[in-house]
Amino acid sequence: MKYICIILATLQLWTFNIFTLGKTQSIGVNKFVEHQTFETFGTSSAWWSQTIADEATAREIARLLYDDETGLGLDIYRYNIGGGEADNPDCRIWDVTRRTESFYVFNKETGEYEYDFTRDANARRMLDMAVEYGVEEVILFCNSPHFSMTVSGQASGGLTEYASNLPKENYAAFVDYVLTIADWFVAQGYPVTAISPINEPQWKWGGDWVGQEGCHYTADETVEVLELFAVEMQKRNSPYKLSGPESGELSPGYYEYIDKFFASKILNDFCDTYAGHSYWLDNKLDIKAAAGEKFKNEYPTKKLEMSEWCELPLTIDSTTIDSGIYMANIIIQDLNLLGAVSWQSWTAVNGDGLMELKNGELVIYNRYYAYKHFSQFIENGMKRIDVTDSFEEKSQIASTAFRGNGKTVLVLVNNAETDQEIKLFGCYKSMDVYRTDAENNCAEIYSGDYSRRLTLPARSITTVVLHEYF
Image 1: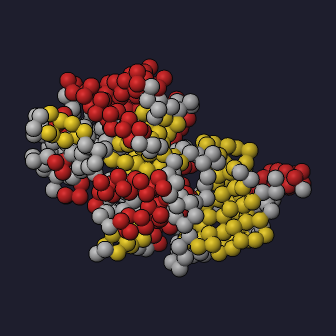
Image 2: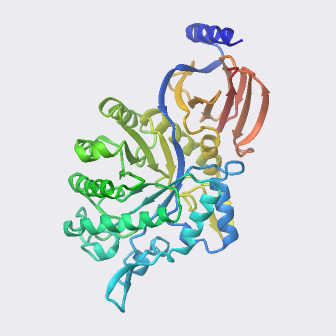
């Protein structure tokens, strides 16, 4: 059977374009063309985790996000090391939910700042529950240095737009502050795998806009700060990686941040990944493809992590299938075009997130089920492989495929307003099919022998798990 399948699959691949032309749309995979090895899915804890006071609600959220059997089975919990705006008497952030409570507090008796790790209790409890449900990686990230270290005395950015809010004389203090907190979490047994001290450095942050914590850095300033982290982490033999710089956009206008990051010998030697966000490039396939080609051709030994995305601005009703389809398309674009080895959402519990707490009730959004089509089935260590299809150039079916552990996972998004009949090709033992549409939420609709015929309902997401003979 093994050799028959190999011969059959090869013949199908060779004759694919000839025998499918003008007939039912066909799709399959080419396992001989491999791309990136996938690592992890995740989400962020900011700024919702500190607002969840009810323990039962917190546990339900943790289960939905991190449980392998009944939830999304996410691997990464991004914990926000806040800049302390909840403690700042001069805070200008108008949304109180975006004011963070810091571990770094001023002691009036001694006149010094000191660490108090009993603080941020709700967020720490959520972290505990996430770990309990199986989180394997904790990434500690900052949106800004602590407000006491900044030029403006605020963590919401400088008083002047596009000016760094961290003076050079405080670079070392910022490094020590982040590593002290990270080392404390490690000492408590948390699986801290990375720190990410800089967030979206290219944005203006501050001035009259103070919607959240943030800090601007030029590309050179970004490199200088991260180099200090790398040097100090090597001195301390830190057991976690340095992640960054969380670039807010991966378009040519901001390639300077990528190129200067890897031009630094210190960072090039110390970091094997570059973290960036997939904002402002929704459905801009040419720009994403160019960024992916840049990484593959210019930095072939490095990996790209897509560490933050949500719909900006939020225009689609989060409860509808349209919101899920939109997110699924973005994930496919980032996996296929950027070659991302990790995909992480922002944020988990919010109006633009995966769910939201409304009047004490947890509302699950359609994006949650869209995410599940990927996180529940694409396993760590699987390789992305080519998808071969007979779809027209402007087909409304988007797809991606991953292979490993004796199975192939094929995710299909039908963006059309009509059902699409497709024919699968390949040789498999059995298959499982999961669907999200107007009636189903990542529900299993078939499990059994391999069938080559498949219907993709209008406006739907389908995950097909193909079990191999060998």
